[in-house]
Length: 380
Image (cartoon, rainbow, N blue to C red; front, side, top):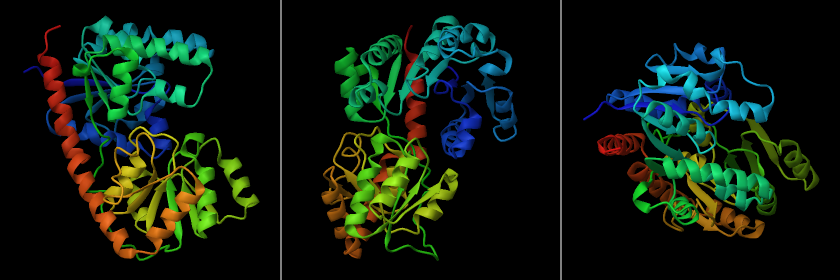
């Protein structure tokens, strides 16, 4: 069997520095650390500059290839986009050392596809969420959707295999892009269940709810603020995003008890999660939300809206509560759980078991290695 040599192409414009500043560096690297322990060789192709080389000491077993450490990036975004197609030619000598080119998301997938054509490796398209579906759901302008449809269709068509994180995404890609199901696998996002594990905190907030995630429109946080106000519980928001100021103003306007806690490094979240009785995710849509999986791995009772991406994870009344996408139903679910400690414990225990069974990092590492082996055994 051929050695497994994987080059991960970061999401376009992403870098190790950005991962670090967002508090997700250790989390994202943990999968590849697990793969290295099983004999895989790993490289990260990033869109950072020389700053990404500063992570060599933290990631000594991973080859770091920052595109703009040696290439001068065009300042004009459109020109920089077209410039990105040329990057695999510039780095072909380095990239040829690897036999699998893996995308982190579809956004940037064209660079990994160009690497496949230039260097001859296999293309594994991984999408944490289906980007084109999001553009449709959020009613982006037609020209944006049309352009991204063409990119997605091209990348999916030439991919040697596709890993998606939900059954809904798999069906969508199959039907919308005409991709045979044999070419698609469904992999959950991974969770480090040793770090994200149940624990007892000396400090607790029994009258507060918490949310972790981007403070953006699709997360539906205005609704969560209204629901917590209705249920008369406080709300702590962990994360950052475009709606920070609007959310703060809305909370002030309705006199809701909301605290904005900012961004925490991922490995500090379990201690924070332990302080709260439950986690609520009120999104309009999701892919395979890591914040939900992490809260479940910590043994927390969870509430989620009955929408794409959440209903595949939460089994109502078994490992969490599903509710309607309105303030009344969310507040009713909050009150139900707050008033029943036995139910919270039952749901939290079952949530933990679900994560151990389907999402542990060891399980996903095994699934990844198996998929690499099958990929490399196929004839061109």
